[in-house]
Length: 91
Image 1 (cartoon, helix red, strand yellow):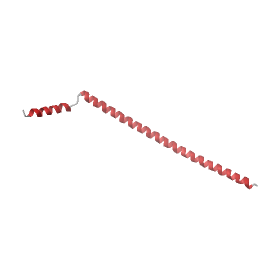
Image 2 (cartoon, helix red, strand yellow):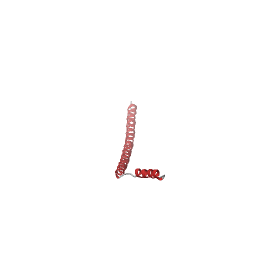
Image 3 (cartoon, rainbow, N blue to C red):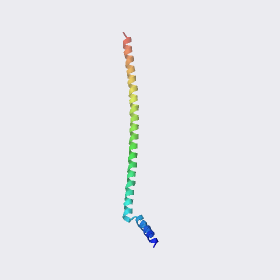
Image 4 (cartoon, rainbow, N blue to C red):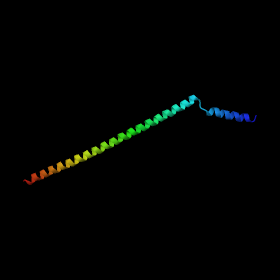
């Protein structure tokens, strides 16, 4: 008789510890959904990284082009200054 409460407790724990097929299916579905969300997060991060890299590359190209325009503008300005000096020297 002393063992009946212990046996009932063990039986209760054993029965509540086992998931039903529906519970297992629910847990599996949740796990699959979580995996899918993680995959989606990874794909989104990779796409953002690629876009950021492309933007950085484009910015570098624009910076080089801007520098070339500045250099060419300076050359033209120097040439015009030289022409102005030669014109003044003809007085």
